[in-house]
Amino acid sequence: MINLGVLVSGSGTNLQAIIDGIDAGRLDAKIKIVISNNANAYAIERAKKHNIPAFIIQDSHFKTREDSDRHIVEIIKSHSVDLVVLAGFMRLLTPVLIKSFPMRIINIHPALLPAFPGLHAQKKAVEYGAKFSGCTVHFVDEGVDTGPIIIQAVVSVDDNDTEETLSKKIQKEEHKIYPEAIRLFAEGRIELKGRKVVIL
Ligand code: GRF
Image (cartoon, rainbow, N blue to C red):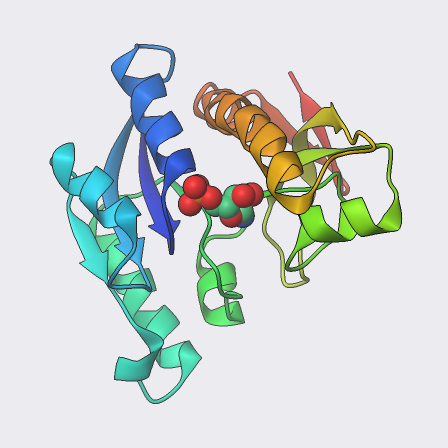
């Protein structure tokens, strides 16, 4: 059993997929805390419904993002979190946070990295004319969506797909591979060789 800290900013459908995976017994983990940088995130309601302590930490309450991240680090550390899970956390982490949990922070990105990093990945895939896109679970390093890749899932991009329809297809896959990646981590089956992840 591992302890998770989940960072969110929005609707929290990935948070929900993780909660559901735990409740269904597919994932041997406990979500110790949810932290949101957005007071209006629906993800906070999802946490409350499942009696998971939720903290709102807004950058505007701190002088710098580093100060805000220092506060996040304190909260995570005081809850014995083994793995930090970014689930739609819509702001870049500073080195303060990244260096505190080396190779213990993961993210899900709605494209097949290294294609379309950063914001609006689904829109970029449609506009570029990619025939396939998907989602990637990866470790977080100091670059933008550049860390070692753990799992990817592929979806086709059809001629009539829009940003919205592609996003829906990708999210369906996100909800499968994110709990799966956490399960692999929890079972100690993720080994890093250079920048490559080997699944044991
Ligand atoms: C997902 O599309 C994820 O790939 C991206 O942010 C979105 C979060 O959605 N990083 P949700 O809040 O989990 O519904």
